[in-house]
Image (cartoon, rainbow, N blue to C red; front, side, top):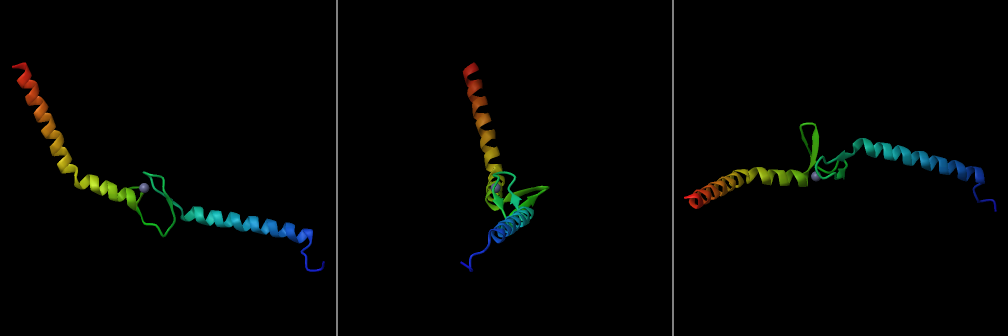
Length: 94
Ligand SMILES: [Zn+2]
């Protein structure tokens, strides 16, 4: 069969494919971004927010924003609960 690639050619091709893969992995690793909180790996297309020197993905960022937005309410609830238990405690001791 004259159309078949020789063994040497096949070996060379395998090496070239391997090199290509290495270069590809290297290229992807360079652009790779990892979310500091959930560990999600994303590439340039996925939005990541830099918070200080950390990167946070959009999902975690939304969650954090939600926590911050409801922080006042949460703080007030904790305060109220403390007041109630204090009052209850006083009531019992009387
Ligand atoms: Zn995340």
